Amino acid sequence: MTELILALDVTVKREALAIAELCAPHLDAIKLGYPLVISSGLSIARDLEPLDLPLIADFKVADIPNTNRLIAEQVFDAGFSSIICHGFTGADAVQACVDVAADFGGACFVVAEMSHPGATEFFHGGTAEKIAQLAVSCGADGIIAPATRPERVRDLRKIVGKRKILSPGVGTQGGDAGAIARLVDAIIVGRAIYEAKDPVTAIKAFSSVR
Ligand code: O7M
Image 1 (cartoon, rainbow, N blue to C red):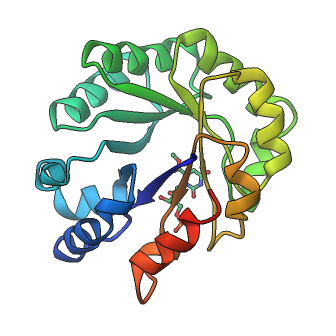
Image 2: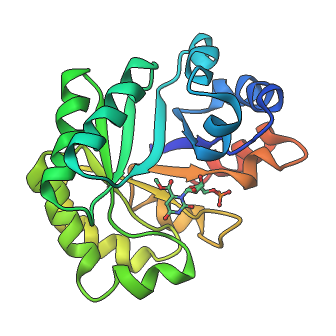
């Protein structure tokens, strides 16, 4: 079954923890990024530890290899199990994240193509394919590819083979969960769950199609 990852972009710590606790039994992982970590600190990972779910650090790391390494070490030290980096920075920068992830027994995912409309400006024309290839050659665990463009996910699947594809853009951004779930290893859902009147009912609706 396709996994379900909650994008916990909730900037009030107490609310984020409450939603995470409510949703945890129905999730496969939680993705945290700048919105929550900037408001609450990296220690939010320790606060979420009792839920016993993999925590994915979505910092879309995009710096020189040494800085990427320093960021990744902080992330895994803080208790995250995966890190997400950008791929346009090149193989050495991605490799730094992949290597630190491996040192910690964690995983590294590379953004191949983004889900918003503007993503086509730079990711199309062969770039996403190159990044997906780079993710494979660096030994990354998988890529991020857009639920809003299933046809692109199909193309990128041909490149990454059995490596994981995690796909955001379901629900609020217009991606169809049922259509994308057949193509990817995990869907990433944020607002359609954490802004729902009843997040668990919302999750169950997603679960029924994956
Ligand atoms: O379901 P949403 O739209 O509320 O949230 C989607 C989450 O996925 C949110 O955390 C975004 O930052 C993230 N995301 C995208 O929406 N599009 C992308 O192309 C990439 C990501 C992402 O998770 O990258 C790792």
